[in-house]
Amino acid sequence: MIRNSRRAAMLMTIAMAAAVLATPALSQANYPSQTVRFVIPAGAGGLPDTVARILGRRLSEKIGQNVVVENRAGGNGAVSVGVLMSSPPDGHTFIVQDGSIYAINPHIYAKMAYSIDDLTPTVMIAAAPLFLAAHSKVPVTTMKEFIDYVKANPGKLNYGSSGVGSTHHLSMEALKASLGLQLTHVPFKGTSESVPALLGGHVDVAFSAYPSLSAAIGSKNITLLATNGAARSAQAPNAPPISDFIPGYEFAPKIGVYARTGTPQAMLEKIAGEVAAIVKEPEIIKQFATAGIEPSGVSLGAYQAMLKADSDRVGKAVKAAGMTPQ
Image 1 (cartoon, rainbow, N blue to C red):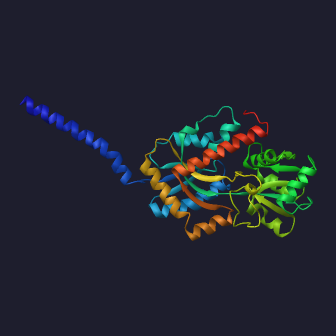
Image 2 (image 1 turned 45 degrees about the vertical axis):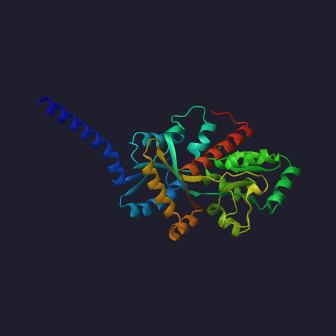
Image 3 (image 1 turned 45 degrees about the horizontal axis):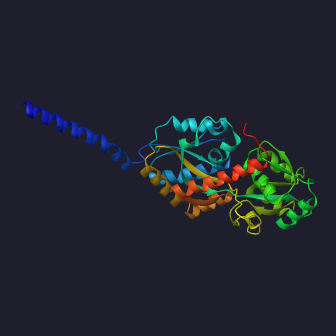
């Protein structure tokens, strides 16, 4: 009798262990099983927000679950990371952002309320290259002419940016350091200020996304000189990449999906695969193009390697600019 009781207890223990082990597999097989959240570390209207909303609508159709976009600005990304970390690592909450939280902030801020180890880059949705543009009052029409002019007139030109530590700022500082150029930095509070300053001739040159510049290009008010992307862009094919003049130069923001570290690999691969397929669809490509966004679909390991390279470039640019983490 005792022997049978022990045997029954052993079988019960084995059954319970099997059930525990089977639960993650079952949940992964049914994944996603509820609403998926895209948390944006900025307000509505920016590039990550635009990308997340375009992607979210199509992803919802494909996975049969709602995809909601939540704007959680604040704390230089810390608020959005807090939302992610307060959610279970079950593949239903993600951050969608342009890489600044991961590749720029660690070089800008001495203390952060989060660690990049909390984040797992899962899939790169798209690149959003910026274009170096000169106001028509600057007597240059090509990137080579710009470089030659600045070298011949050190300190004569200024450049606008969307703020200290922004991609716009770091793109120019890396350019200056690599070519030994002297331009004066004029920081603004976002592109809503820096672009009008360029168009009005209050600053000589600036980096900006193509949609913000397209109307002025048509009016001959400004000239596109180059792109900070890795290659020529279909948006402005006549603008060469700065890497033609500085080997290895590349500062285009890389908008992607970030999961909480610890999320099961199968779930990460599921989302990455869905996103990679969606960004190749003609209608999505068309919608992205309107916003100056170029689809990518780079997944997991490759995306992480790209961000590591970005971080290294940012570190050098920050050092060249003489910036001290605050």
